[in-house]
Image (cartoon, rainbow, N blue to C red; front, side):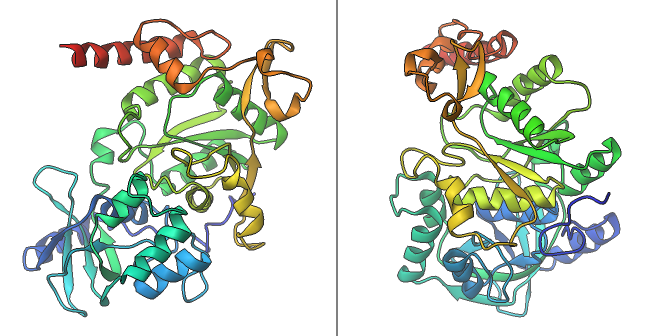
Length: 400
């Protein structure tokens, strides 16, 4: 059986170039004006280069960006849930010219992509307000996604791009960063057909682990893709290398062989809640997954979104047939003292809060920082050990 088709195309359309073309572009770039991109625009380039944003060929113009924000479609009808833009304070070339795009996240700001500039436009105050309202559902400058978007400038530089590399992700996370092409290839090699994707920017505790088991069983899946965000996070989030170590330990000890792929992707999180959940679905389909686990407050931050808005958006706003991938809807999962196992809380209506092992993220953070392992019903001891070492290290650094 063939793998699930990519979104909007018969095959992946990664914008990464081969070695020969890379050499040509590097030589050409020496003769071109250059622009240091925002981190968000660089992350978009990496996602396009890695095939995750198939079938996009480059950065959206103003009309497509607004259409994606308002209708989750580009002006030519492609379903796409968020603007994919290159915003800057100004553009050093005119429309029709070539532009070298350099990487803000690597020392020396090396070349990341080369684009043919098709249009240079400006977002109005109303345009920005529309994008913030529809994509982020807030214009609060304290929202990290809003802050990142509004800090980029108002000049929309659009056109097709060719991507030369994957920024710092391949070098910094060689064991974890994978392109959509590589994931599809490995899924095929493993002989998997039904694959559940689990999105994470945090370490995985017992509830997350059991959720993956539940989804695999309920959907008769062959495997789980644990797909972690490797890009820029908000302050306080756990670094990718610590997450990676704790997740791999959990997989090694508590999942059957050949049932899990632990991988990561390079992107700057939007914290856009429901809209970002839909974007996650698009690029997990491009990575060859048939299902995506969408849990409570998926891709959210603070209290900007309702607990299950990232699930209901698929009912209320995503048109039928827009995606081939299906959503696996998850409630809060917790260890039931009554049943002696992890359950979805919605499936235990006879339970009171006292019947669950419930710990806030703040409480767990305090325990780990003090070298106290959370209860084994909440966190695997081997995972807790890795996290305790990290928290004690940073707390020790702060106190020096």
